[in-house]
Image (cartoon, rainbow, N blue to C red; front, side, top):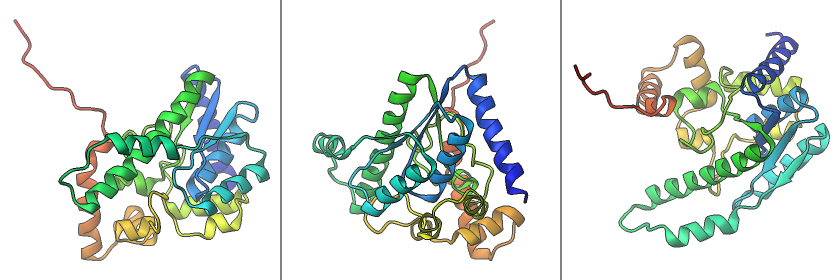
Length: 246
């Protein structure tokens, strides 16, 4: 793949989609991870004067915050920090969690973090007439590995047709700091959480299946189940049909 051509195409696509919507620029959440770093650098190229990256720590890993700052410094990305810890804690105090298992509680609380970040990004987008840029890759979108109305609640997804391995190669081309490229992919939603650990599959296995349809029977069954179960995440809300009156 010609990474320069791809970069130019994505940068132009971001500009075009913002222009089509009558927007002035873009806002992106910067987590310190690979995908959000690539998205932020593309946004910086698309809108050098009208882009903003937001770091939104919420009981977050300190290393991720440091990586986000390193990236912002290297690429001169305008950044604001909105700490969501106390807001998140206050919500947990008033939200009931009776009669649910620890696993269900952990997932619900993790999704709450993602949805608070979505609210924060749109607060700035509304103020500035910017569009919210997501950083989900093709693997995540197809498998539904995102929070509905959380990190999935965005205006545009420039990386949405790139496999995880392709995002990694693009990151190398863009000179994303190597520690960001090398660390295990993680949404940072709880201590020790990793994407591959939660998915129960490696990104290499997922990439291979999505690119060629090749996988072991067990892997194929798991992936097809995840794709089917998450179909609702990739659709607009369903609207009930009613018979037309005559």
